[in-house]
Amino acid sequence: MRFDLETAPANVAYKLLVGLVAPRPIALITSMDEHGRINAAPFSAYNYLCTDPPIVGIGVTDRPGEDRVPKDTARNIRRTGEFVVNVVTEDIAEQMNICATDFPHGVSEVEMAGLTTAPSQVVKPPRIAEAHAALECREHTTMEIGRSRIILGRVVSVYVDDRFIDAEGPYVKAEELHAIGRMNGLGNYARTRDAFLVIPRVPYKEWKKSHS
Image 1 (cartoon, rainbow, N blue to C red):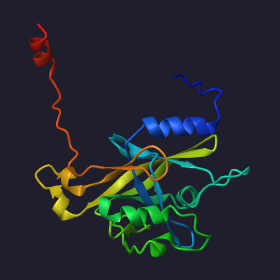
Image 2 (spheres, rainbow, N blue to C red; image 1 turned 180 degrees about the vertical axis):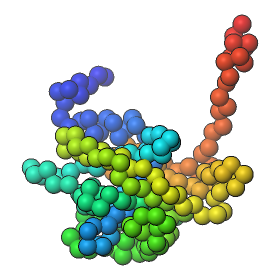
Image 3 (cartoon, one colour; image 1 turned 90 degrees about the vertical axis):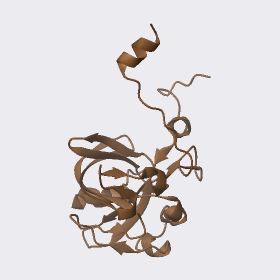
Image 4 (tube, one colour; image 1 turned 90 degrees about the horizontal axis):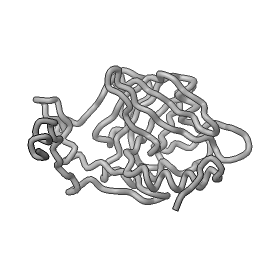
C-alpha cells in the first residue's frame, strides 16, 4: 500500500511512522521550572544527532486541544535552558511508564513512580537516581514546527554507573545495560537483553576482493 502523507490526517502519519521508525530509544527527561519544581516525562522521538559538538534531538508535541499549549518539558527547557536525559532500562521500565501518566498540575511524576533524584554535575535539573546513565544537556535551539517542538540539546556531561563502562575506551557495555526501545503504538516495547547482533563493517578492499 502507498500513503500520501501530504494529504493524510496527522494520526495516519503518526501510526505509520511509529511503526516503521523503530525501535526507538527512550529519553526519560527530567526538567525544572523557574520555581525549582521537577518534571519527569518519557519521549521516544529521540536520538543523538552529532558528536562534535555532542547534540541530541527530542520531538515534543503540544498538549491535545485547539490551543497550541506546550507540554511541561518543552516549556521548562525553553525557560531554563537545561534538562537531563535519563536512559531507560528494563529495571525502571514500569516507573518510566508511570511518568507518562497525565497527572494534574503540581503532582510529582517522580514521587508517583517511586523514583528518587540525585544532583547533576553541571546542570540544575537532577538526574533519576535509579537510572544507570544520564546525559546532562543545555538547550542549543528549539524549533516550532506545526504542533511540535523539536529541541536540540548539547550534552555537557554524562553519567554512567561504573559497572557499565569499559574504561579502556571508554566504551559503554550496552549488552549489559539492557536498555529498552519503543515500538509501534502505545505500550509496545523491545528488549535489548540477549538480542545483540554483531555484523562487522566490510572495508571496500575486502568487498571488492570477494566480488571480483
